[in-house]
Length: 76
Image (cartoon, rainbow, N blue to C red; front, side, top):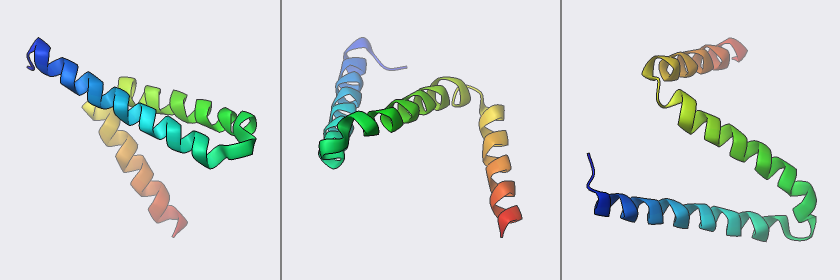
């Protein structure tokens, strides 16, 4: 377990990474920021679900990886 003071450093790091990704998104989107925001919101929801749901269950994470590998090999 991390100490309370160590957790703040991790939270600041995560906040900085999110801010950096948002800045890069705004830079890439340029004039089409409103249209591109739809894709950003879909990606954010998907990332939230993956981090909160799948990573907490190792079995579900393994199934997800296995089904992904099976889908890739079936298309080849």
